[in-house]
Image 1: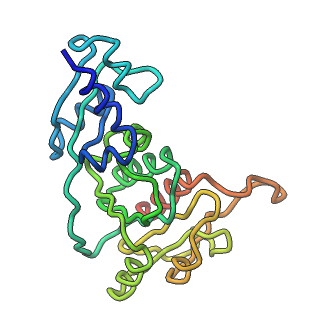
Image 2: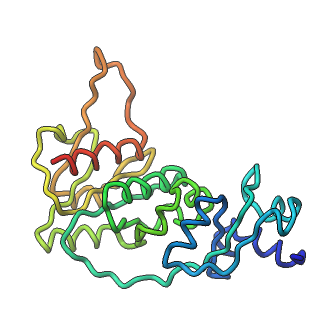
Length: 234
């Protein structure tokens, strides 16, 4: 039987300060728990509704409809920064958990092993990020960093830094390398001026709306999918 103290501690993992304090996060759902168990992450406990009871699961869950299984997973130790040649993603102040999780899932799909995130991005172990990633957080490294410094490192290694801008050049007419850093910006304000100044190539996903009266912009996760697909298509 789970004690009230144990239930309270697991429930508290929905808040960042407690994830930091305990060095753990929770995953919910059969698929995510299976992904966690098959990963290199340490799973400290698995709870099933049939074993602990529906009431306990409901109290532990951060979801409106509790799943039948929940696992508590240890956060991995931060990795040292080793920058090798290849294609990477950079996220500049992406704050929506759904967008962050979807972008991590896209990185996994398109073979991007590391995502560099500015310090003001939403935390990767936020429950909504974890859910939206559909398990990809166990395969993609998310490194929180000084993003302008990372851009300068890429430039110093003669690797391009691509940024997506509304005043950029048509992406489909540009030469795209198979290495470098692709920056995606904040949901409302795009890429910050400091990061934008370090972009070697400014890309635009052109609109094909009739009479120029279409949507003003794209959701950042949607834009990321289009950009990564074009890079890999080349």
